[in-house]
Amino acid sequence: MDVASTSLGEVLVDAEGMTLYMFDPDAQGASTCYDDCAAAWPPLLTDDDDPDTGDGADDSKVGTVARDDGTSQVTYNGWPVYLWAQDTAPGDVTGQAVGGKWWVLDRDGEPPRTTP
Image 1 (cartoon, helix red, strand yellow):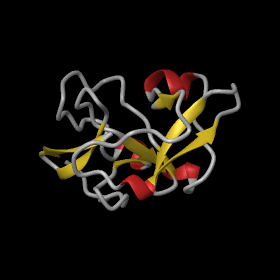
Image 2 (cartoon, rainbow, N blue to C red; image 1 turned 45 degrees about the vertical axis):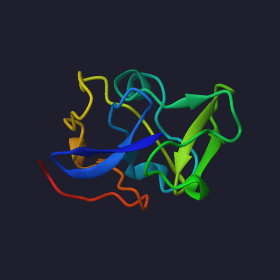
Image 3 (cartoon, rainbow, N blue to C red; image 1 turned 135 degrees about the vertical axis):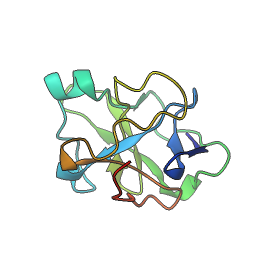
Image 4 (cartoon, one colour; image 1 turned 90 degrees about the horizontal axis):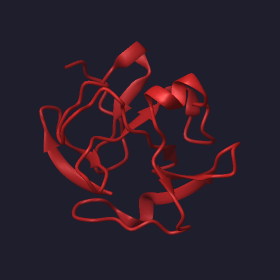
């Protein structure tokens, strides 16, 4: 997990530079996005209980949460994080404000609730 510059400012991205998002219904806890939701918003999964961070991300804010299917999802500042299937290139932020519930996370782990 890294931090990269996008049209929304500095936001969290995965190792390939794809933007990561949080989902309001998760309420900084367990993931609530499964089935069709998880197909559109793939969770960032890990096999490591202590996922690595890269430039700009705060190691102390990174964690994991167990999903109902037994996998482990990466969290940042308590928020389970997801990719958006419709983002096609690093730096895309097309998932911002989808349904009024999906938001990028800044380096502090806060969702800037602005619309693009």
